[in-house]
Length: 317
Image 1 (tube, helix red, strand yellow):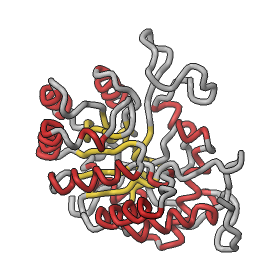
Image 2 (cartoon, helix red, strand yellow):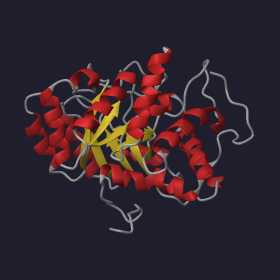
Image 3 (cartoon, helix red, strand yellow):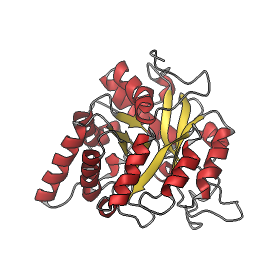
Image 4 (cartoon, rainbow, N blue to C red):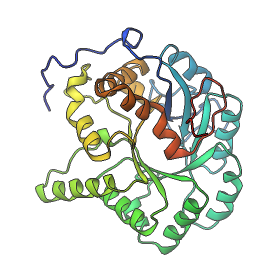
């Protein structure tokens, strides 16, 4: 994949120097963990010098200073049941956190009891399923109990995030949203999904995405935008236009969400670099598109409630 040469966008722009940077931002995809805990952490591995350090709200506040980020939604990075509680306690102590997406296993014994336990906390906004922790959403969707438990999730007004998309996962989301039309689904990290090499498979996944684009309860998280190509991470918005344009064409302005994937994003670039690429792209559309992407759509997807006056709210509220 070659870098796109164009004068439409330049190198990493400066957020401070861009117009409309008063738009508040809700980062819908960050992770909390602390390797210093006695039990350690299931992720990241200790061999990862970039990631293996505490990732907590206080550190996020420092690295996001000046970017206009006023709220975050934490997304699970542990399959340990009690880490749902640990994250909720961390979140409760800092008003920048407007929600968490936990890890519970639909289809497994105890799911409904665990869901009832955690959904009583207003910060608990949903769960994440997909290609992680040895699970496979494309296989799980064939289990009637899995589907029944997801229906319970939807009935509770909570959201399903998906993890690490590929063609099979996208097809599974089509089936899930057919079976449970009132379940809100957020597809994470679509910019990182490489199209299948087989032409027929590419056509199928394209058709599946178009179908999901027609379903108003399905959102796409524009996260993991930066990519390493040939040993470097391109620093121009031009390079990422194709995939950003494709998501815009499929999901439109009202169902795209901002997510940084911090601190995992540190493997590709700094948080300002992550923010500035998408800020330039969406401000290049118009201010309304940028506002929808950076905060309005997150309320529709997650139904979070603001905890600080710096956090925006819809006028209808």
